[in-house]
Image 1 (tube, rainbow, N blue to C red):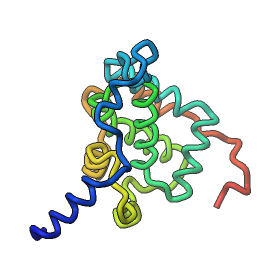
Image 2: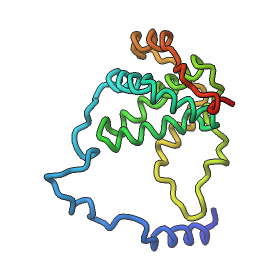
Image 3: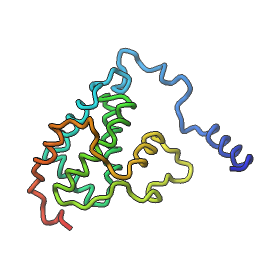
Image 4: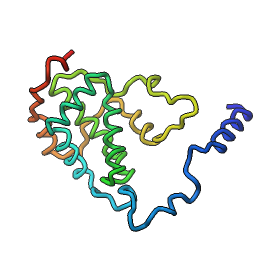
Length: 180
């Protein structure tokens, strides 16, 4: 990038009003912190994986995940939604979010295979480019997720979850209108 282009980008970002005011987080009420400002609910990787396994295998959630995957939403986009929501709700810290990304992708892919749904792991990167002027809100998470080409079963993946993935019964109540 040329020096003038870099200067223009710096000026554009530096003069943007689409960002928090310096020190804004210090004005929040300390008696009512946001969920992500408290201690996380889960601090161990197997706990997080068990929580999400139970959530994914609930019939209503399982159907919604399958519908999204059937509508050409990539596995990584689904994972990103669950991870960001979990962080916002104070379930885990950002480090844990990055640690469980691949196992969650593996779980979702296994559940989709079990139900016979075709899916893509990572969609076309050109589809997800940001609009002009819109900054990437989750650069570290996006970079970590884009590095996962094929989710693998890790050594420390809980054996009861691995067995559970093999025994899950896909939802039978999918309507004919939802089928393609």
